[in-house]
Length: 241
Image (tube, rainbow, N blue to C red; front, side):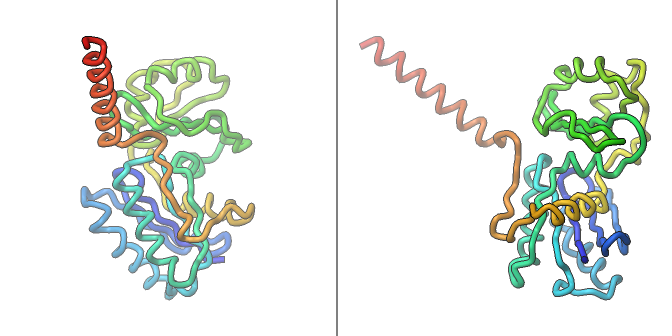
């Protein structure tokens, strides 16, 4: 099985090609360029260096969320464009699950992506058993305190929101440091999760590939706030009559 995986959920971009259990290719890029500039050339290079074409791909894996709204849309659009002509199956991978899949050993990994407004998209996993300990969601960094303080195993943070977590919880006993260069997302890990999803029949056709943002966008939040304010003002005017 050939799985081509794309990671555009955060600040970095990545592409990987997994052939059964063999990682044929992986590229990780953190050069400050936009994903719209880089992702298609990275995919093209991947296929060329592996001497494959889109016709050879059995499954596309891509981060479906959470993460950067723009980044997710770019990755999903690229994969849809490649998958549509042959109706190739796609795996909508949890960004946080893929972050955890890049690490092995004993302990607990808490995956965190910077969601702005003092929040992180977060989830936690037991590395030894692969058990999910916390569902994907947007949380205030402060709201992770109970989980961190009650964690029985060594704990470390990964993802582009890891620095926020280390700043608050880094001095707690049992919290282990991870070098910043090893905290980012890996397209190879997206491919590994996509492989498991394919085995469990969790892949979808490209037209069913959708983002899972886990919260409203800024524009949607501002619209909701504006409509709520207008509704309140209308009630006040009615009350005065």
